[in-house]
Image 1 (tube, rainbow, N blue to C red):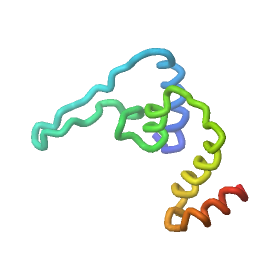
Image 2: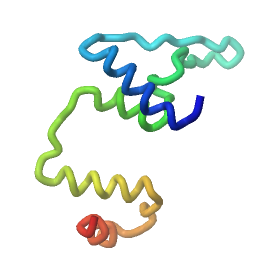
Image 3: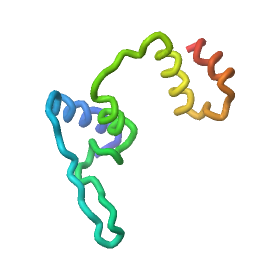
Image 4: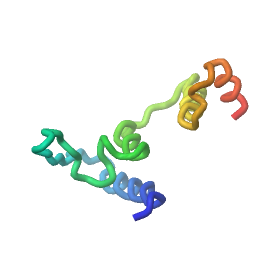
Length: 95
């Protein structure tokens, strides 16, 4: 499976699981005494899109300052986190 298939798989699973409660199965590694998720796609240790679908499963409006902070977060994800907040603020207004 290619990484480009992951968003489609996530969407299919979310549509199937909509309005249902679910459990995340864990497997216990007895050598390290550490639990690992058994599922492949949606679990707390998944890639960013999988974690986001679990974290933000219940939608919430962004509010007045939400779009600005969403742009700042996007800039942080693309390597602009070393810049000062003032420079990111100016860059976010341009986007």
